[in-house]
Image 1 (cartoon, helix red, strand yellow):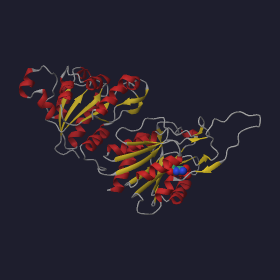
Image 2 (tube, helix red, strand yellow):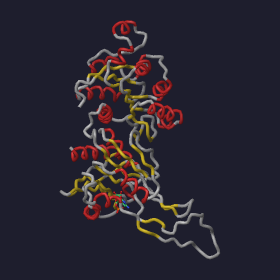
Image 3 (cartoon, rainbow, N blue to C red):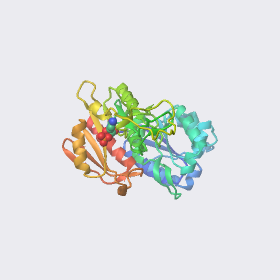
Image 4 (cartoon, rainbow, N blue to C red):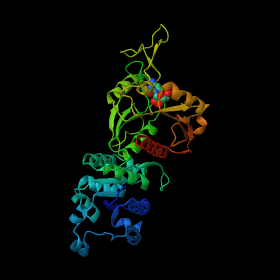
Length: 397
Ligand code: C5P
């Protein structure tokens, strides 16, 4: 996948640095040539000897190492690679990069480079969510830096949330995609995600509990395989994926129109929890309490987006995937839904409260296609997304 590519790997000082050793091994397995750069503090987490042994290369460690400067200056080091990967990218390294500081070898190389840069952030959840880090992230993205992760989950510090470094396999996929090498490079894929909000009046609406987490994870996994993603999202709790074309909508009708505008696409993944009905009597003024009793709401059916794009015709995507959240007879109901909607696959899951899936970080799905159901074990939503993206890549190949 990365045959002959020269990768400069900057290892920051985080507990996730141990995963960078595995990353080096996998990069080399994928055909890349790895030159490691260790920050001074990173040496507290991994030893230069182990990094050097795995990389099969000299480790570059300090800006003021005169031997290195004589053999290969930092400018040359930064330009001699096809890509620079920063993993783990600590809050400190991100801040230095965003501000253009150059006070050690890693930051100097990153400032001097003209090659594409991919960062895999890893830090405590509060540090990640801090406005300063989010400001730095936005600046780096504006500067053209690509970002993979972080993932959500249990952290070494005992907290839970976004901050865990992406797994080496995901970093490699993102790198391959950045270098135009992913299995979905050149493919355009539509993902719908999140809930819809159906107004009752200017301040009230009908909604559902979808967080948008699974849809966003699928979009990230498709991006990591090199796809161009159009992400049509209702008002979700989770941020939209970096690197997608994001089309924010509120209502089912707006989502339908945005989806139709996005066609043609190679594949459409409908992960949104679309409201089945809208309030046909929505008021353009705030409803008030009156002596005449309770307000009467009238309802109208919303367009079924999945069904609409599954209709045979010139603009039908090659692959259409729908979702089915069920509380009983999951496989039977979802199999019937696949036929009713006319889509190619249905990803079904049991959302009974006892499963803890709705709003949780894990999912257990059954993927149903024309050949029947395929049961997947329970796993993180990110892992479901990665497995689904691989299956989509195979179907479109
Ligand atoms: O009919 P039901 O809502 O159970 O179907 C779920 C699937 O259909 C999901 O893939 C959802 O995104 C899609 N859907 C849609 N438009 C609707 C209702 C559901 O695209 N109006």
